[in-house]
Image (cartoon, rainbow, N blue to C red; front, side, top):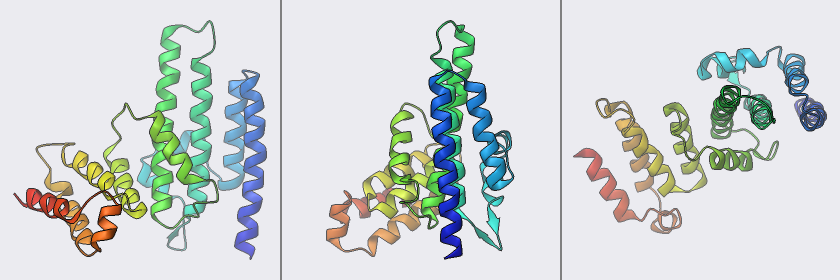
Length: 229
């Protein structure tokens, strides 16, 4: 009960802060909007946006470990703040009168933050986060739509593969795994064992499940044979 009340209070505070950020964005007060997000992050987690965006993603995730367990619901809240930060930079890029260089820099900052936010959402969902807390599945699909023209970082592509498998979208999971195999043609063995494990898990499923997931059994066997070749 205490844990639930704690999360609800944090969610209420986040909702209020994001409402303020939305108003500040409309007023084109981008610096103030970023400060509002940063202050919320400090109050809730004792962190700041600069730290979340500069450290390796794996190190940030470890910062949410408590008593040996990653607090994934807290992690997805941090992901939401980083996502909102990305939208502030997108708004900055649309301001009339800024030069091309500043526009490009703002767009790049937005993309970097969207990618990082996506990684944290996926990691949280893959490790038991409450999907209804922040409508994280919808947020994931929204970010994927916005970034579809870009190649995902390998670590994020792996989380996406695991997430699609969890969803039962086996054909899309396979696509992610094969993109990983092609990240570095000289070192495909880095992911080969995980792709093989993926196919072996699918072999344990019923034919109907595989059909519904877009990857019939014959395609599973073909994929495994091709991998072994």
